[in-house]
Amino acid sequence: MHKIEIRTEKDECYFISRTFNFVKLVIAKGKNEIRFIKVDDFTWKITGKDIASLMKEKQEDRVFIYYGIKKEQISVDDFDISFINSPKMKIYNTEIYIYLTLDNKIRFIWNQFPSAKSYIQNAQITDIRMQKKQNLILNFQVVTKCIPIDKLNIVTINRQKQATHTIETKYINSRKGENSTFINSFSVTYDIVEAIKKLLELFIMTSTIMMLLILDLLFNQKLFL
Image 1 (cartoon, rainbow, N blue to C red):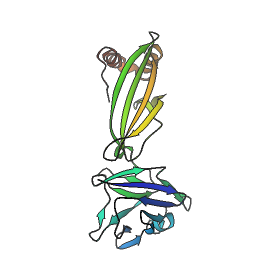
Image 2: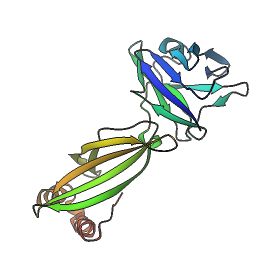
Image 3: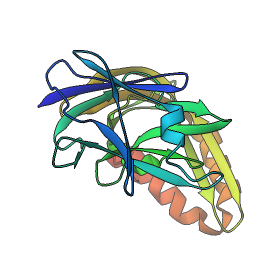
Image 4: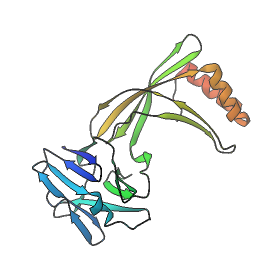
């Protein structure tokens, strides 16, 4: 599978591939299209100004990326794609993102945030242990597509009471996986007594259910998502 690295610098976006030579790499919206500039044998770039010229001002909008005579879209199904820094640019005080769609295509958008659902492939607990009889330590991995992550919060939400409880995790490392994926490792420490108190405050109407989930997690070591 051919590899593509995507890098942004201020208001420019670069596509880098040492194994694939793009023929007619363009951004397009309707009948309008603009070619990427070939910087060298391995690098193509497009400016934020060019991307913005195809967007509707002050509206959520997107621009497609095509390559080749047949105008194929770049997809993680066909390429091993990695974002090597932030996928965000800024032009005319508006943020432009290069993002992964739910159907695994690469596009540009502005005036909206990319969906996290596109990037999260799966998550699993890798280790559970007790410390000092009261602290529960969970190590877990989150597999993401195209981009590594180094910050993750666990948020418990009671929509009826509009209450939330956030727990910060500790970042361990990220490593490249296969087929455009990254394996990101984190850990989180729960003070069991304090965690139960918080859960009871947030979910007083469903405290019995939450207690059962906690007990099941402690004794059967299952992950509930």
